[in-house]
Length: 243
Length: 153
Image (cartoon, rainbow over all chains, first blue to last red; front, top):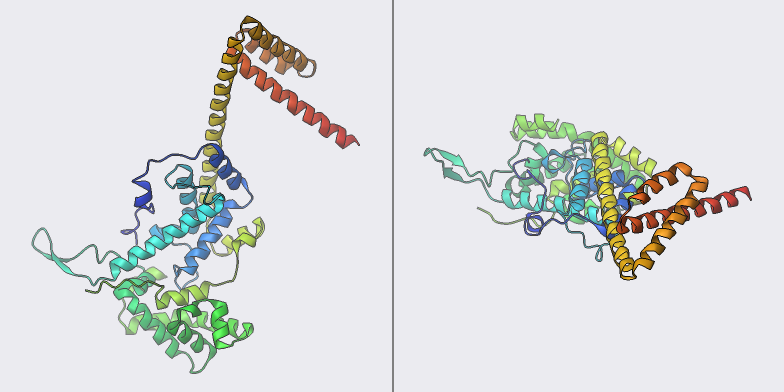
């Protein structure tokens, strides 16, 4: 992951334009926003929601800590605020008068850019190249996200096909015609079903049945993953990492 | 080699999205709920909070400097205006500031002494800034008086 995101800065915006730290009315507005109660916590929680909505967090563990570059959502919130204040990001307060919303949009952009990069790089198959000493080695660009994090491997390796297979196998391992199997198959077939209300509506599940099924999915996921990795010979080091 | 770029979340990511969809909207939560929310999700806020406090402090320092610079520029403008009005206008500014310091001395003699010392060696620009400072002080004092009289009602 680090190989890709040594810095979250968006080069188009920062390298071309000269940095102008916030001043005057913009600085006043930013300070007022930052002084509002719970600003940092709210931005942190918003970033967590954004990351969750983009599928950043592994479905096989509860940890919300790691985002691109090994940062937490709170670290990322701090980065965004710092860059907004020092002028690395250009805040057009005519377009977006709310400083909090501006920070939110920058965080969303960072997460989206990271996903785009990861997908672009790993959509290519690793190719062999001749190194300086004549030895054959893997092209470092298209192996950049082969990563040590299992979830990352599942998401991006081979254009995400490994993850697709895992989801399908997981669904089929669950009791036939159970709500939990129906939910997983619905997600597999229809991207809209990643939204709770839509998924419930499609499957005509009550809130209670849906929540109970999701609970069973959460319970079953870790042990399924363990077995699946063993059977499919997914790197043991990767599995260790995810724990 | 496939150059296809998946335009949407992969299937395993959909599972992740669904499992994290808690229906919570941070914008509707109060400070206490937000603190609990991040705590429940094991996000360590201590380091980021310190960093955030430092960023805010730095931003405020920059704001203070900026305001001081603006005031100085305004003072220069006023001084120029006074100078263009001739010796009489300069004396008028000096008299106004002297009267304000005297008035301040009735309630805050220590503070007035500080201003009096500055007054002794003040250039015309300094006088303009002193006048602004003292006017602000008078305004604050009159606001305080208003507040006090409302409290005693």
